[in-house]
Length: 313
Image 1: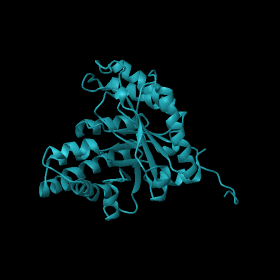
Image 2: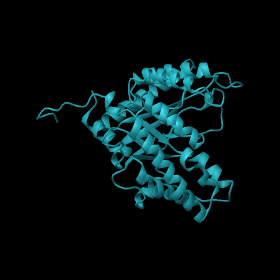
Image 3: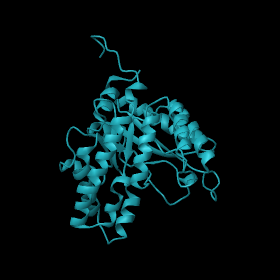
C-alpha cells in the first residue's frame, strides 16, 4: 500500500484518470554539447533554451522532468503552470564511456530532501543496468538507498534503468534486449521503484513486425509490478507516437518524453525555434496526450491507495 504523501504526489503528476504525459527536459551535458555545435554558449543560453521549451510545451503536460541547474530557473520565472507537477533528477549523466563503465554519480549538493523542499512531486534516478554485470548488486543497493530516502520524504521514485550489452563490441540483439528488459523490470519492481521509466523493449530498426512489438510489450508490462511509463530515447516522433499507442494498450500509464518532441529545436535559433515549439512542438504534445488518454492504464491499477483512519497521522 502506498503512503498518503506519495499518493498525492503521483496525483500531481497525472490526470484525474491516472494518466501521465510528462515532458522531459533534464538533459545537461549532452544538450550543452549539441547547442555548442551551433555557436559558443553560456549557462544563460542553456537556461533560456529550457525556459522556452517549458513555456511553450509544459501547459500540455501533466508534469515536467527538469534539472535544478538549467531547468528550475525557468520554473522560477513562471514558465510552468502551477497545476503541472515537477520531477527532478538525482544523477549526473556522462555519455562518454561505454554504458558498462557509466557509474552512478549523484548531483553534488542535491538530494531527495532538497527535491521535496523545493516543491517537486517526484525524484528521478537513471542507472545503466545489466542483471549479470559485476556491479548489479551495488547498483541495486544504491536504488534501495534512494528509495529509503524517498520513503522518508514521501517522494515517489521514478527509476530509469537503461540496458546495455556486456560485450563492448556488440549491441544488444532483440531477443537479448527483451529478456533483459523483462528481468530488469521485475527486479526493480521489488527494490523500491514507485514508477518505472522504461525503454521500448524492441529495437524497431531491426524488427519491423508490430506483432512482435505487441508481444514484447505484453511481457514487459506483465513483469512490471509497479506502474510504468515509456521513454522516447530520441526516436523520431512518428515512431514514438506509435510506440506510445502500443505501450499504453499493453499497460503503460503514459510517457516521459523529451527529444522526440523538441529535439529539432536544438539546431534552431531565435524566432525559428519559437515558431517550431509553438506549432510542431505543441502539436506533438497534444497528439501524445490524446493517445495516452485513449489507451493508457491508470497508475492506480497497480498501486493500492492509502486507507486512513481518523487519527492516521
